[in-house]
Length: 166
Image: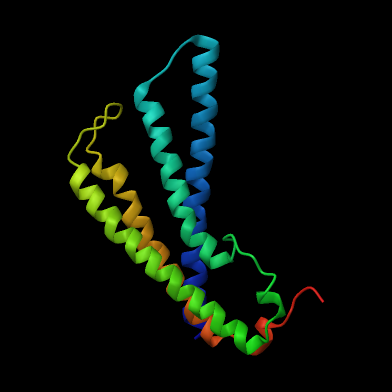
């Protein structure tokens, strides 16, 4: 079990690293394009489109990170007042709901990518499938994160559900 946890920690670090690098490149590219546009009146449609691609990537890539770290939007006023055994059930139910929504996201994201993906982008001149394909790809990664979170919840000791802000 420890070996699985170590492998999971390495995969999580890689996952976080890819997101951090993409965010860093996005920040640099946005600053670069703003400076070039306003100081030198230079603009490139391919770089602008690449920025959109990076923004899209970081947004959808972050879905799974939010699930793993519990950073998604939640209203805990009722949850905090529940017994630990009920909290476990509610958390697993929440994971099931998230998984259903994510599967729908994957299904319709894939259908959209296949249908609209034959168009060529105006900036980078690549098939739009690569841009639209980010949705189902990141959706699958998010689904894996949801399953991991559900398994962690089921295997967690009851003390993990005790109130943290007494």
